Length: 224
Image 1 (cartoon, helix red, strand yellow):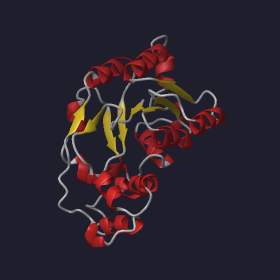
Image 2 (cartoon, helix red, strand yellow; image 1 turned 45 degrees about the horizontal axis):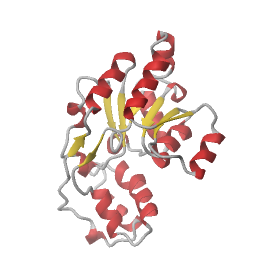
Image 3 (cartoon, one colour; image 1 turned 45 degrees about the vertical axis):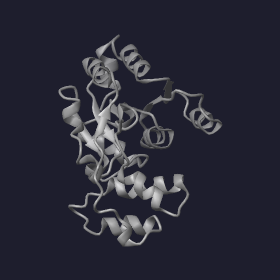
């Protein structure tokens, strides 16, 4: 099982580099966020020194606008998040699959926060692909010797977690506390049986326990 991190298990304690760039960009906020997710979150500056300029160009900014002095905020887990991951890990192997920039992840060791319950931590900047790019889920599945169809991905975002899982041929467990929009309802109808909607992380844990506890064969069929 793969698990999203941001706004599924917790949230940053301040403004992220992505949020800062979205605010600076002349593009509409949703479009700017999608551009940042696609390029910035898949960028490893240790291998691509020109990456910041590429990000700025895609966001309609001058290269000098990139905030090289950005101070990443610490990531704070929500109460009960560690216990939730521990419960899941008791019945199924858990890895994280998180959209995050190289710059913002430097402030917090997510794997350490969730130790010893994770099999592995997979930030997008290390994978080279960010959700909803199908290659993100497919790469994680391959790294753990699984077919994407065996993966259950859990997250809070329709645009990134649900669409990313579906694009890869995986299943999605969508944490959505509100009534889904008509757009979301149409998407779910196009993929019957592939997406389960729950209100919060507690309900997500209960669902995972319900579908995995009856048999070890079920556990194998839903994990990377």
